[in-house]
Amino acid sequence: MKSARALAGLLATSGVLHFVHPRPFDGIVPRSLPGGPRTWTYLSGAAELAVAAAVAHPRSRRLGGLAAAGLFAAVFPANVRMAVDWRHASPARRAVAYGRLPLQVPLVLWGLRVARQA
Image 1 (cartoon, rainbow, N blue to C red):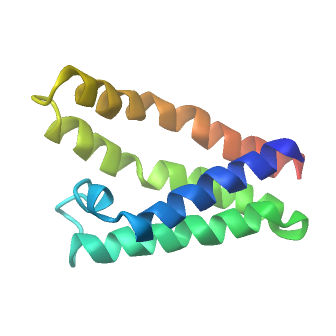
Image 2: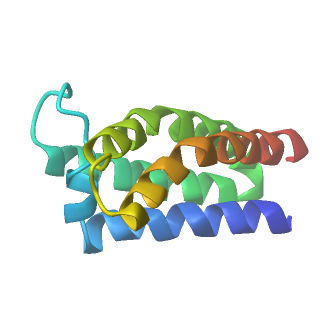
């Protein structure tokens, strides 16, 4: 399934970026979470890699799609944090931060669609 492969690729790429370039992710971890931001960056990167693997494999694709939808919903507070923190940033940075908020809806729906089609 082409859609599932694309979703797995997106998740895997993002997961790898959490480990290769963690600093931008550290900056959007909500302050209310216990522990250090880097721990949450690595945990979320590992979660994205695990979900990517689940989506990629036909036997676990249904569960992987559901997990992807849940993951996309779970990271929404980080996107809100970015939007709040960047509200006085340059117009380009604000566009990125604000653009991420509505993007979560199609991502959640994508995960649900992959699960449904599995």
